[in-house]
Image (cartoon, rainbow, N blue to C red):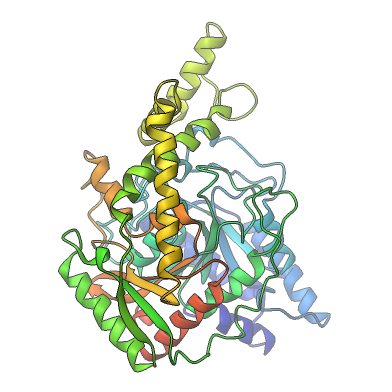
Length: 483
């Protein structure tokens, strides 16, 4: 049963081939057997999962139906889950049990989804490799010596290893799409505001966005259907009708205009990945798409702008973790200042401390105009580049990452090298655009992804293109050896 996709599970449950409880027990057994190799889970919620599965079976017995009713999944461990540890991958929140459910969690629970557990992640979602977690690095099921990408690396590794069919993630600078690419999954970052951030512990509030990780575009459509929608509790949530994301998956690509930014194919891109990207372009052309070269002239400024804006927002968001109300508190503080200083120094890891310090510096008196304000101006230029491009094309295509997954520890002494792995993904977050990564082949046995970007609220278009591509390729069906 572990090989089934979400769509296949929905059909199997509807046809009474198995019950949600049977499926849930089988997957929980698999998680306990195989996850010690991967370290993809922080918490496994056996009792909750079984009770939710039984409830889902009862609802089906009473005549209810739904694609997610009884479907098992897991949540990245920054979505608050009532009564269950929500750690954000940090010592700071190791003892924190959320008193409420995040909107994403409550919406999926209402749809009947079964929560198998909370997945490992880079601490406070800061990282591209899932190596900064307080609970240890997550391993890539395609090669256990390599990273799975981050910060949603636990979700990606668990789904790729067939421990469960799908999981939630969050994307601040590529943290859904990049691990999806490095583990042979389909990962979707929705338009900013499409999915509620309420109850999602913040890293950078103007960039964070929740989304699905699954094996196919069809499954991402089902999961996004359950996650998306307006939330009055989230001031950045957009009151826009939610379309049926599965309705147009099989729509024709005849005449679809695909833009290839010339800036994507420069010196930093592994030439083997470039070949796979062009091969995917040829497949889409066979399906009727038309390809043209475009330009995103301000892309070169994206990384410096992002690594001013994101740390600045992080330094503000993480100021609430001070050892007073909740979370980690140092022992025997001498006074209030000592409580603040030692609780934060002991509770936060090195990468989080680095970004807090960078952000505090960028926002400090005398430097705000020179750094933060300039970065926001660059952000506007990047958005304008996309708006110009989408006047000429329907979607933008390129690599998701410049390189395949690297070895665990290979970039620990060079944070900037790790930051550069986000070069193709962060522009979508700066502009608030939707993006999807889909499997496109392998380099030396390690997966490679191709990224598609679209105008605001055009997630359906991205899923349509990805689904049609997956109908004529089989990359997404490959399974890592041993799983």
